[in-house]
Length: 296
Image (tube, rainbow, N blue to C red; front, side, top):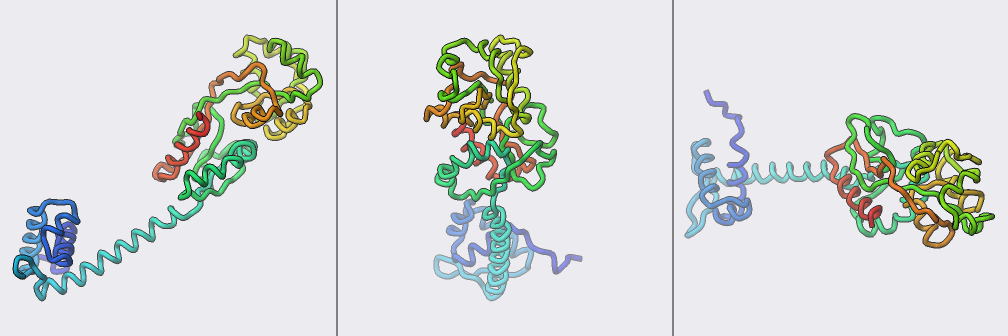
């Protein structure tokens, strides 16, 4: 026996609600982006399922019958409620701040100076920035995405948007004692200098040396710093030669506060925007913006 409480086809109800509200099959078809015939078939099927007429002729148009009026009121209210619920479900993700984690040095020296441009270009994106000290957790807990320098293999479950190749090079202040003479010498002259270095990037100097045909075992290290940010501040202050990713010192190079006489070399690493959430369109939007900034 047929269940009297069984719901009619959702497509048939949508066709009926539009046709009854607009009092036109043609207008309903246009609103639903289907053909006139498709709406007509849905209406016939619905009337057959319910066993009564839902429309009456009204000149060259149609109008709901008494039964049709009852169904129109119920279906319109139901669709409105569903629409409001769907909008409310979308709103928290759209309005909630996007939590972006990144190492403190990248945050301070690269992200924050570009926030005005980001807010201008992506006004719909509200950011919450979280400085990350040390390694990121495998699940990136508490973050929508993380901006970092790294290289494959990435942790399982991460979706990584590769933004740009990592490029590094030695930099120092033109006010550093002996800076002018050093800038005129080949890279191998750095063997004679105590190099500034950071614990967070111990591979940076050896990588640069090997890329330039220099024996990295002959490098001599001076003052070390816990974080890259302090390392670069020391270089700007004229305390020695530091190794740095190009984007983090581009502003100081442009202003003449630092010099990079031997340029920068590619490493095996890259800038990446990493996430474990594959269904957030804001990640793709932000990745495209970051890529333009890093490659521009």
